[in-house]
Image (cartoon, rainbow, N blue to C red):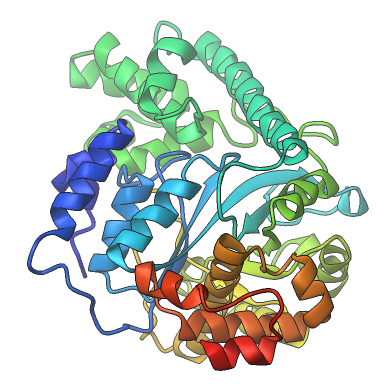
Length: 447
């Protein structure tokens, strides 16, 4: 596997200046070992970039280069609440000749499941939700208004959380404007940016490590030895801090309600108006909402869902054998249900925490039966992206509504396109042979 510290080894790829990133990629592309590789039958379709938070500090450009080094067949980014990285990522993947997709992730409130947890633990009615297959971050005005609302809601929640945590952690404080936002390339802060700021602020306030450990021990309610051990493994310790301060029961946490997040309908309007695809984000099948998965997916489909998302590693790579058996069984059942309902699977690893896999272990016995479903799902969304990006003939287009009236027909067509059309300029040249007067069969023959 390629070195997971790609952003640190090539810092210019993740510089906050876009021009610097682009020039750094040009330099790498020009190296003799940057030729195309044999497809590896591996994909990662759920990578957060530094526009939300990436555990390795990677920009969309750095992720594209990492995907090339990993020999991925297809790669996708998904950032929280923003589309800031879409154009950069698709352009960078063109340049390194990597099949690509781009999307957004956010949280929505679903009134029909107001009393049931779905995929956000401890938060009934709240659902992590995605849009995949965006072709640009420049969306129509109506969609832009919804996108602006997502950013404003996130900013307001963050500022309120920082205010509560600052009051509790005195004398350690972090300024949202001066300490947290500068850690982001475009002012879209997350809890993980806040964590970094608070860890840094504690180190500055208590330069003596023993005193710093004692501070954290008192504030987090843990013993001094555990705090000292945490400071020796800061990335893992951040999870402890986040759990104690920012998650349910923590001083920074505020229980969400029906008005905290936009509705599913609002976010799906943003996605569909932008020519992209609503995508249900499945967790592990253990929550009350996901135990009613047929009802939940029926609702999602009614509201416009065209695909589902899975983070496989947390569903099979589990030490406890009893928990592993339950979650692997749930995983297989969910993938089969998605297939029965004609919902392609978007699968990846998130990469929003240091230590997460850069690509799933597709050779693991638990993963092997799912490989084809994950590959087909990745090529499906790439095929849609191609058709929408270059011809405005993607999944949501008027052309598709006429020629591909069912989900099954759309899935088969865009998956075929995804497998047949290479990335980069060669693929774009092939797409120039296609037009809206052609039938799906004619297009497949032409390609």
